Image 1 (cartoon, one colour):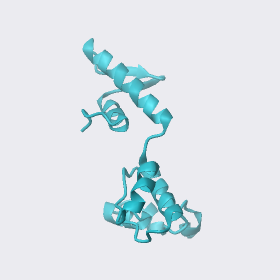
Image 2 (cartoon, one colour; image 1 turned 30 degrees about the vertical axis):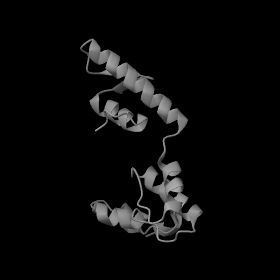
Image 3 (cartoon, helix red, strand yellow; image 1 turned 180 degrees about the vertical axis):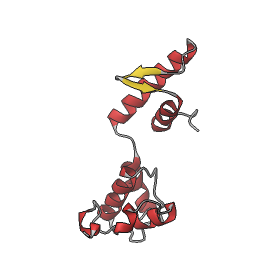
Image 4 (cartoon, helix red, strand yellow; image 1 turned 60 degrees about the horizontal axis):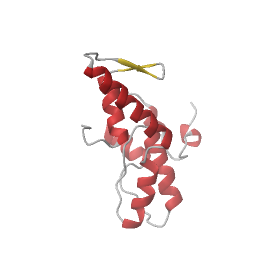
Length: 128
């Protein structure tokens, strides 16, 4: 069996991360989703944030104000994501005004969960 530690993006996640059935606590611990304890390692913090975001996490705990800008940048939506979110919100809301519950945006189906995700990305106050 291959040790996945050397093949993961962060290079230090154990293979337990990839075992179905692991609970969220183990997953968060494995990717370093808790607070980053080394304040001066901004590159390491950025890499941890990028990995966490790629796995669906929406943020990371900070223990020092110096870490906040790094975490904010890593978890901020890219301009293309913001544009997509605005198109989805506009199209879905227009469809709802006509009584429709589903609309197509960029060739993909948009329903309530996709709309809510777009609200989250756009930072809309109506987001859950």
